[in-house]
Length: 290
Image (cartoon, rainbow, N blue to C red; front, side):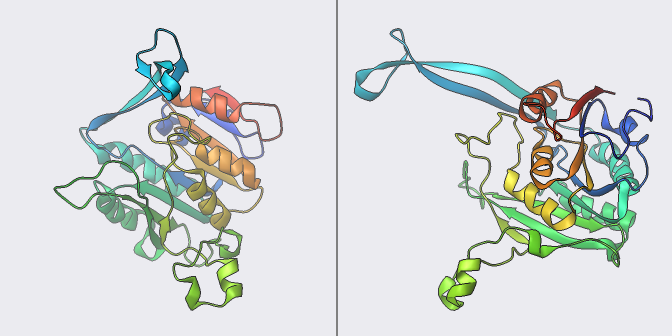
């Protein structure tokens, strides 16, 4: 990839390709916020398939008022989430994230219980322990439940800043949440809601909702929008180099931020073309090949 392929000040951009060689050619300290949702190293292939039901005389299901329906299986989305040496893969990419982060910038690293404790140690060494800002717990309540252990219903988001004395954080711009005990506060406070803490209760992307793209690891727009609102300003550049379904791009366009997204999965690029490339306006990205 030519170093002239992308530079701050140009259009929103989506790059298809291996993220590491792309990152190595990007300008230092170019991004106010970086959000990373890398593979979780679950040891299995992640899959999601779209399924629709249509009326059919030859249908294999009987539904409302005895009508026949046929189940149609759509595109199967999948990627391999298993690494022989996970940290040999992820560590150099986190080093690039530190290099690319602006002095006032913030990194959000989204993982689960399998690797997040190792990530904390690595990021403490890379950024410095004084640059650790928060451990955010994203808690949700959906899906299968184990009966042989406490069901796992949360992810962890580690938050680091480049400079603990200069980082940008504006809590007044984020959405507010309902009080869990509204009767204990004044009616005015209850109506306004409270600022979020480091535990975010937010549902996953609804399997039947308009937000769903069908991408296996799609994250809710609401949690990404909250990060952007707090840790960036209108016009700032933000980066996601495991961009998947492109949720950061959607949130950035809504909030007036500029974005660069990178992913090497052709299925992810196809989802982002549908999701971000519809219509022609200032926020519509250019799609490039690394």
